[in-house]
Length: 157
View 1 (cartoon, rainbow, N blue to C red):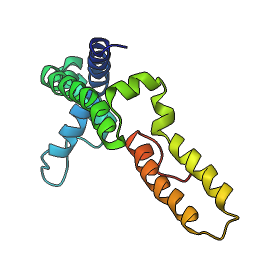
View 2: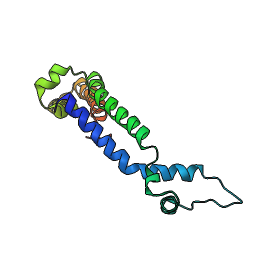
View 3: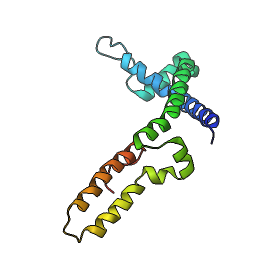
View 4: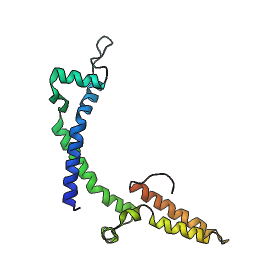
């Protein structure tokens, strides 16, 4: 998928997600900012707030502020999408040409190097030289960071 297609897909996904979730955000904001009069609040909860808003102001009022919300969310998504891979490559030590040449970035980002180091550790564990036992742990720590940055889990192997 090219950069233009990624950008378009990102914009469409962000627009859809924002449009679907905006009524919840509008009601959340109303609940947070409601004025208490004589110890009572106009809204008791999310569902009651939605129904009361629809009955008093119409269903369209749940999408108040959609245009600025779309601008914010589409810009954020586009920026995050465009910056994610360059930052990931920087942290993991890839160049764009290496990533494109490799063709399987996820395997490298999720610890291919660790798999080789881990095998080396077991192969050398029978020796009395403990330096071989230490080096794979250093490789594991670096690969762990790579897995974490690449969106992997923070858990064990």
